[in-house]
Image (cartoon, rainbow over all chains, first blue to last red; front, side, top):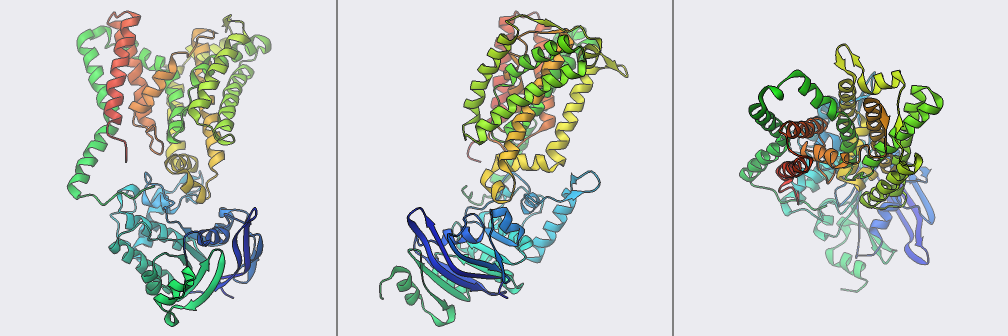
Length: 243
Length: 326
């Protein structure tokens, strides 16, 4: 059973069709890229899978089991984690609090926050993933953009039991930081996670993805193995113009 | 949210020094002003009675400061606390006359505060209005209610238990008001630093959308904080009623500025996400010390107001300067 399988997903906002009959399977240990022009419906699709929007029609299955999420927390409880492009992190809090945001560890018997244990687990996780930060107790805002996105991905890794969705995870990053984040995505894949990543960057798609699926104005134009397609072919699928 | 460019280490070091200095403004200011009054007024300032008075007079401010730390941490403001003091005090005093039971009176006062907070919280969350405007409106509304409810009459409090517990009592040789301050400060610190709720308040204040996608119930947190603020204001009102053995609609009318100054000088950011409970408590003692010192110095009420305004202005600029953009 694949971690994620979508069949016939459609989404209408009033009279407007945002997504029309979208199908996709993502296997464990596979990175699938979702590409398309602005307004093609990529982010809408991510929001549907992560429970922010509900599909008008179609089926979402996680490991074969049909799911219908009420909201984002519901999706998270089912092992779906999202890395947002605008970093859904809290700058003024320490790294470890960000990792455990909304799921803080507490100590028995009085339910006090267990800061030491959260810091310890965070340190272990960032060491495992080879994310270099001064300390897990550093304020998140003191880290660079790349380090912060790495923390967002580390958080997703820590909590995702099935699927990690990434909405343009490197859109705001420089070249070196992008390379680091891509390395992290490949590590996620090596650990057997299913990753669906929205990207605008063709070179990136060829560097990290196994397969790529193209959306144009809400319609799924096609899905290709990255090894069997070319930059030009993808561009013409995205734009609808023959090259 | 934007991503700041990576800073050069030297620049970061300087920032760190400036930042930590700002966090300590209230402590430095407290010591400086303390030494100044001690030097200029000698024994009339430096004696047990005066020092105890400074703490007991600060009690209502300290308790409201605890609630206000949570409100500012959320990036919100509650301007209605001053008038809630009067309404809660009058409600408690009137209930006491009717029921004769101090605890029913106290609960009624606290319930009024929580209700004002609930109204504020609902308008801020459900109606999505800025807390500045909502609480500006409820400030006037509550003050009007306080005047209306007893027709501008003051209500005496003669119940011995009420007067002991919420005013003139002593426990283990320490005035009960100091106990109230200490308990409020410890509970406030505990909830802010050691409880999930405090972590969620700071997260919502720093980045509400991040908090929401992380599964934090943002609306619930916001309403709870406004109710907490209203309840601490009501408790301050009960303590005024107990200490002064009566309630009038003028109680607490000048407290709003003192509370905000105490909390901001204490290192809690107006923009949310950053808080210091200990700083706020020291801030409230600082405000009380200034009030007392200026009184001892023989300044007229008008002169006291001017000097107090200047001192607050200096302290606030020291603790907030250059904070924009970060």
